[in-house]
Length: 449
Ligand code: CS2
Image (cartoon, rainbow, N blue to C red; front, side, top):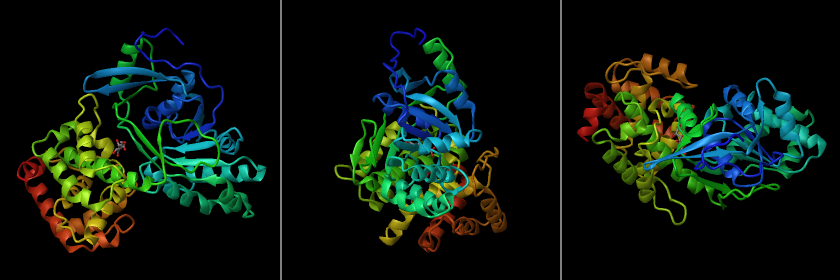
């Protein structure tokens, strides 16, 4: 390794082989699982489904890349050495399948985003083909560990893969082998890691003295709670191993991610760029706090030792970190895939418990207005969402009437549970908020809450 400044933490002896195959080479993986693995003696082969940019940069850099940890007090740099090999799935699918089957692979981890689990041709198909090969060879047991922000993410992964197994093996034998030899633990992952930008690469160059095109920036906080259900060996990750991941997932998805999405839609509509700026809009922080206390906390039972309001306070402090520039539009992406677990699940549980739904109707109204594609000052807002066509068609058919637009969004039955769609109080409250947002914009609406 080239000589780096003395205060940059660098890896010690690097692992020679990869016991982990990771699918998804995004910034989150590099600042989360790759860092946890760097603290062990295991290595990772990282496989990118589509984009080659990061994979090429990592290959060029011998797998090395830097993580800048940005706290309110400044930055610290660390070079990560856990990635020992790279695969570009779109052009090397057979090699990726072989790696799932390889007896040297003990754990497959995934960060492929929420929508990837719906595309059988993509990652689920790859896993099924690899598992069929592993089964046919009678390979060692395997753990498939999902690290995406989905509830019951282990079960979700299994459910996406299992129906494809029979066709992958043509005789049905794979299914039985998988049943006996493969586990799909759930996990809750947490660290705020914005997509890297030119500023990230510039910081890396100025702090390291070398170009790093796989550099990432992240907040100091990091957490990983894993269901203790491994089929074989695993790295000694410094994570929390438990049998109740569901409680952690729910707490994080509804509190951190739910408030994140809320601030993302409000901020985008108010023409601010980042979550930190959105939270600083007059009234926004008070609203977030209120939402957590009045709607999110009563919707869930936190895991032992946790308190939703205290957890939420910590989340708000993290969102306020001025070192992190997390763009509202990045978080606003794929709302149809995120809001079921971040918002609709909360609403469904509150409705069942007959809790008033007035406050939580505001994020729903904000998403509805965001989907129409114009901010409060008339700037175009991109709708980057797999259900874009369905959303836009329903909204166009609804016309200008706020109640009709809310009904159009709640009518997306692929993503909105029936108990939510049919709730009159929610519909009324969301239509009221949407009317406010249409007339006065986000800033005035928040200020007058
Ligand atoms: C964010 C998450 O992009 C998003 O939708 O809400 O990526 C969030 O930053 C992480 O889940 C934090 O752990």
